[in-house]
Image (tube, rainbow, N blue to C red):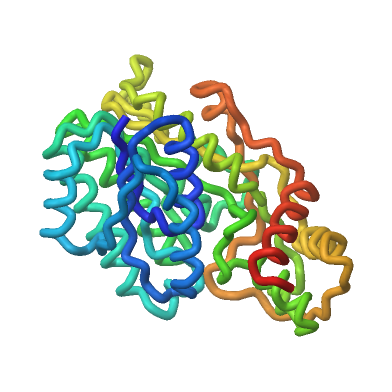
Length: 335
C-alpha cells in the first residue's frame, strides 16, 4: 500500500514507518521537526529509514493548510497513520496554543485531506489521558471520557469526536487508538523513562512526583506499533448492533472505532524506577515532589476490544522492555 505516516520523525511514528517499509509498503513521512525536544534525535530516527527506496520525507507543519492540501492531492495515499501531534501533558499547561494549532487545526487538515482524496482508512493516535478524572480501572473504551484534566487530553478527546463526524458525514473509515504510556528505544527525552535513565547515569537526582504514588500502564513501543499496523489493515466498519437509543461510545453506525493499546499491567512508579536502577546497575537519588497539575493517579488498559478485533494484545514484560531501552540509550548516547 501507499501510506502516509505523519510524525515520521517521532518516537512511535518512526518505528511505524520502519515496520511498514519492512513489510513492503510505500511510505511517505511528514514531520515539522520542531524543537520541543532535540531535533538531532528526530534526524537520527529519520536516518534509520534512509536505506529504503520506498520511503520519502517532507518537512511540513500540520497547521499549514495549503501544504497539507497539496500533500494529500499529490500523494494518492491509500491509508493514513496520523501520529503527528504536539505531545506532552505538562507542556500543554505552559503552551496551550501549540496544542490548538497542531492537535485541533492540524487534525482537521488531516481529516480534510483524507475525505477529499479517497483515503481508505485513517488510523490516528488518541491517548489514555482522555480518561481524565476517571478512577475506576481498568479503563474501558466504553467508559465516559467527559472530564479531561489537561488541555492535551481535551484535544485528543476532540479528535475522536471530529473523526466521528467525518465518518458519519462522508463515510470515511477512522480508528482512534488510545495509547498508554509508551517507552522503549528511540524514546522521547521529555518522558520519565528517558529522564530517569539520563539522570541516574549522570548521578543527578530525579524528581518523583506525588511522592511516587502513581501507577502507569507502561507499554513497550514494539507492542504499540504492532497494534497500529494490525488496526491499519482492519478497516473500520459500521457496527450493526449499535443503537441510537443506547449509543455505545466506542463503535457507531458510521465506520468509526476506538481501541485501547496498553500492557494491561499497571506498575507503581517506585517499581518502575527500581527496574531502571537494576538495568543500569546504579541507584537513583530521589527528590520527592507533590502531585503536578494534569497528572492522573493510575492508568490501566482494558484491551479486550482490540484483541477481539485484531487478535493482539501487548505482552512485553517491563524488565525486558527496560533492558532493551537501557541498552539502546547507552549505545546511542555512548554512556
